[in-house]
Structures are given as structure tokens and as C-alpha cells.
Amino acid sequence: MTILENVNHFSNRFGKGVIVNNTAWRYYRLGAGAPILWLTGGLRRAALGFAFMERLATRHTVIAPDYPPVQTIDEFITAFDTIMQTEGIDTFALGGQSYGGLLAQAYLARKTKAVERLILSSTGPADYGKGWLPVEYAIIALVRLLPEKTVKNMLIGGLLKAIILPEAERVQWLEAINDVMQNDLSRADVVSHFAVVADLIRKGVVTPAACQDWTGRIIVLSAENDPTQSKKDFPRYEKLFGRAVEILDMGNMGHAAVLFNPDKYAELLEQALV
Image 1 (cartoon, rainbow, N blue to C red):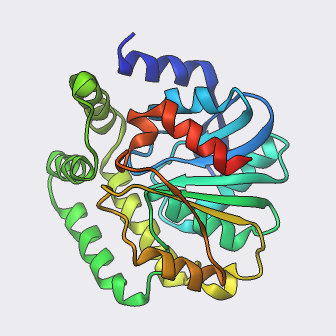
Image 2 (image 1 turned 45 degrees about the vertical axis):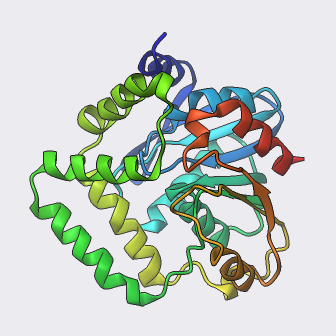
């Protein structure tokens, strides 16, 4: 099967849904064992990580939601609560890749008793100061004004700058990514991408005061060639959580190893889950 066919097969096989405050949320449950709530990145469709999740599910129960075009961080938090309650899971490991890492930090800040450990990959600390709000608002205004096709192409272009597509599967991955962007996502999804971050900043969700009472493990997966990560992130993480974080070196696996190197990525994540 092609990558796009695998994505659709995975979605049909493991997809479930709940309605939260009149919004439909789709998510995936697979595997058995200790549970992990996995929050996907800016492409907003968890099924793109089908290969990684199938490998992780050999030892763990994996829960991974898609993201509808909601506007607030509280809508995400309420939906994650509802999904985990629906699945009968009270405590779990929490992982987030890229954009999902920001959501994971916000969820932890509000739900410290439920999270046993936090795994962050290809993401930075979400303790943004309010000085970032004008930037977010400007982007949101631009996204609402420009033609939808232009907005989608801008988002695809930005994402492709952060990732290195494997040459052997380049055409198939471009097909899958373009299919999601052009046929599944809308302008509202792009607005949501930035609006939720702005809401997180405005409400001051991720702060030392919210995070430092939590005593679980914090593991950061870091790649040398990931343009979204910096060595400056680690002192910020230590300040946010009040202690040192554990670092798993991803070498040169890049920003999106979860998609393009699922075997090695799942192996690394297993180290964080031991």
C-alpha cells in the first residue's frame, strides 16, 4: 500500500469519535499495556504517524486524537479529558511532538495528577511571555484575509522547511501531506493552529507555578538538525519545572522522525517509557 492508503487503512481500523460541547473529536485507540496519550504535530491528523503508533502499540495502549478547528486551549483540555474518561484511563504517560508538545505542556499544567511522565519531542518550552501575543494576532489576521489556497500553501511550505523528507518515499509523503492539507483541513484549522497558542499565552497556562508541584519524569527527545529546537531550551525547561530534564539524543533524525523513521523513533520512545 502507498503511504496515503496506509493512513486511510489505519484511520478506518482504529478510529473512534466523541462529541465534546457540540464539536466532533476523532481519535485513535490501539494496542494494550500501559497507556500513553500521544499528541500529534501541526499537520493535525494523528493517523499520519500510523507506522510509529503501530510499533508503539505492541507494548502500550496508544490514544492519539486529531485536532478539530477549535479556538481555545480549554477546548483541547476538555476534549482530552473526555477521551481518556471514555476509554476508562485515569493515569497515563503524556507525549507530544512539535505542536503537540505545546499542547502536552498545557495539559500537564492543568492535569498534574493524571500524568505519570511527560515526553516532549521536537518542541520547545511553552512558557511564552505575553510579548508574543501581537505576533500571534498578526498571523491570525493574515490567515483570515488571504485566499484559503494561499494560506494552505504557506502552512505546507513552513512545515516542509522544518522536515527532511526521505528520498525513497518523498513522492508518497508529499502526496499524503498535500491530501490532508487540500482535502481535509480548512482555513479554520490554520486559524485554530495559531489561535490556540495565542489563547495559551493570554491565559498564562504554562508557568513554573503550574508545573513545579508535579514530580513526574520529564524526557526531551532532541535532534541536532531540528531547526525548531535549541540548546537554550534546556535551561528554560529547568526553570519551568524546577529541576533538570532527561535528554534522549536523536542524533540527526530531524524534526519529523516520528513519521519518517518510525522504527528507531519507537525504540527511543520505549526508553522514555521504561
